[in-house]
Length: 46
Image (tube, rainbow, N blue to C red):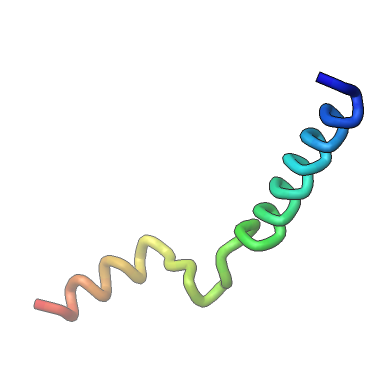
């Protein structure tokens, strides 16, 4: 495999990983739930 192809492969994989980290790095704060919130919601839904 030529060096240009290796460089392109490495750069392509790096770009995909960076994009994945940017978009999926952390959930929004509103989406996070504490363990206590899950218990109280279950108790309300009897």
